[in-house]
Image 1 (cartoon, rainbow over the protein chains, first blue to last red):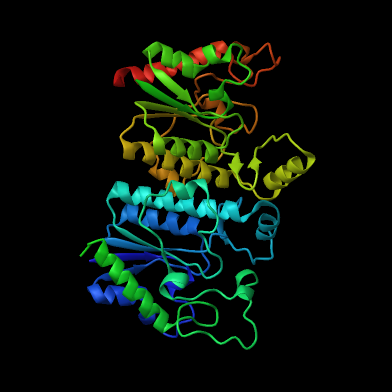
Image 2: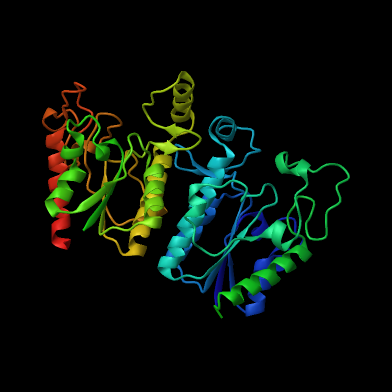
Amino acid sequence: MKILYNGCSITWGDELTDRENQRYSRLVSNHYNAEEVNLASNGISNDRIVRESIAYLDKNSVDLIVVQFTLYTRIEWFRKDGSILDMHIHQKKHPASFYYKWIYNDYNGIENMWKNLVLFDTYCTQKRIKYVPLLADHHKDALQLKNNWQKLYHGKPLTHLHRGILKRTPKPHMMSSGNIPEGYIPENFTLPNNHPSPKGHKLIAEKVIELIDDVSVF
Amino acid sequence: MFLYFNGCSYTYGKWCPDRENKIYSTLVSNHFGADHYNDSVCASSNDEIVERTLKWLKDNTCDHAIIMMTHDGRMKLNQRFLPHRTGTQEQIKLNDMFYRNFYSDELGATNFYRNRYILEQAFEKRNIPLLLMQYVPLPYQGTNIWKEMCKGDLPLVAKTMFRMNELSPKIKTILGRTSNKEYYYNEECKQNSHPNPKGHRKIADFVIGKLTPTI
C-alpha cells in the first residue's frame, strides 16, 4: 500500500522536533502499514501542490492521495529564466511586492484555489484515484467569498484543519500581519507559528483515518 | 444536433459584416442543420473561456463543442489583462506594468495549457467530442506538466505580426498571416484584424472537415 501526501508546511511537519515521525502523514501510514510518500514543502502554493501532485501521479501509482490545500493568497510565478517561485503576501521583494500591491485581490486568490480544486478533482476522477482533501484555514476563512469556480467543484467536501479538526479560530491580530505577539501562549494543538503540535498532528491523523475509511480504500 | 461554440472575438465575429449569418459558428451549424449556441465574448482570456464553458456545461449539454482558445498573453486577474489594452488611463497603466514587470511567456504558456487541460478533461468526463483550435502559436516552445498532459498540437488559426517568434514563419495556420487581405480585411473597420466573411468561410470549412467523419 502506498499513500501520497502533499501540502504546505503543515503536511511537511514544520515546528515539530521529530518531524518525520510526528507528522500526521507518518501516523496515518503507520496505521495502515502503508508506504508514506510526502511531497510537501514549506510555503508552497496550491498551484504547485496540484501541479506537483499530478506530475507525480502521472508517473507513479498510489492507492490514495491526501492533499492539503493551503492559503489561497499564495500563487506560483514563473521567472523569465524559467525558474519558479511561490509568492506569499508577506514577501516584500519584487515580484511579490508588485503582485500583491497591484494585481492581487482576495476574490482572485479564492477563485484560483477553487480552480485548482476543480482541476485536481477532475484529474483524480478521470484516473480513478481516491483522494482526501484537507484545507488549511489558519489565516482567513476560504469559504467567505463565493465565486464561480466554487460552484463548479463537485468533489469531496473539504475538511478544515484549523476551524474543523483543531477547533482553533485564528487570532484576529494574526490574520493579516502573520506576526506572533509577545506573550502569546500557544494552544495545545498548535505551535507558536500556527503549525500543528504533535497533539495536533495526532488529531489530524485520526480524522484523516476516518476520512480514508469513509472512501473505502483499504 | 446541438453544437456549442466558445472563444474570443474571432469566434464572436467581431467586425464581420452581417455577423450572425456569416460567422463560422453559423456556417458550420447551417451545414449540419444543427442548432447551436455561441458563447464567445470579445477580448476574453482563456481563463474566461474555460470558466464560461464549464458554467454552461453545468446545466447544459451538446453533441459537439468547438472552442477556439485565444492569446496565451491574456489573463483574468483583478482585471482582464490584455497585451494591447485599451480603457481608462489607470487600466492601461496597470496593464503595461503587468506585462513589463510580471508577465513571462512561460507564465502565459503554463496558464494556457492548464486551461486547455481543464477543458479537455471536462469534455472527456462528459463524453462530448471537443474540437479545440488555437488562435495563434505560443511564443514559449518549452514544456510543462500541463502541456505534457494535453492531447498533442492544436490546429492554429492565424499568424500575427504581434509577438511573432522565429518558429512562426514555418508554422501552418488555417488563415495565414493577418496581413493577408483576402481573409482579414474588413471594410467596416478598414483594417486586417479579424476574419472577414471569406475568413469565416475558411474556418467553417476546416471545422466541417473535422466534424464530418464523426457525425
